[in-house]
Length: 173
Image (cartoon, rainbow, N blue to C red; front, side):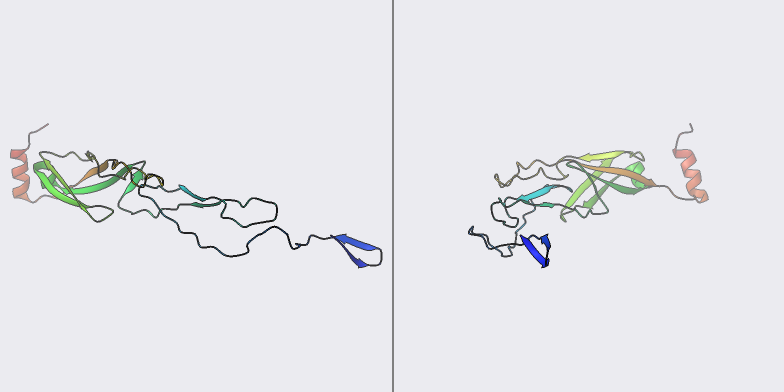
């Protein structure tokens, strides 16, 4: 619209005018449902939930998921990676141990025999679940694997009886 500021001085200015079209000017609360198995960076889309303007189709509202990670676990696809520290005794003779999972359930881990430093135990079905689909409501129950990397805490020094035992019990290279 043209607006006269002074005699002979006219400027063009945009002004919102009442419309014959029905546009609502109200706030709307969006309910977000984060589905099982969703990952960092997944996008949730609310179709045509943006503001309304005369003669225009309302836009979509898109929310990008930002996941706060548990420091004990690293997610790679559907797999979860974590680590476990063993004593030298556990590494040599085997162990029965438990690991508290993200949702609080307990995963039993055991090994009979020698565990090598850096070895990875793979537990099928204890990783992240397959992503649910909004229209299906349920995932098929499949989950990735849990990978547990073994670290062996070696003693810093040995007393004399332990040193003598080790020299008799362990073969020379």
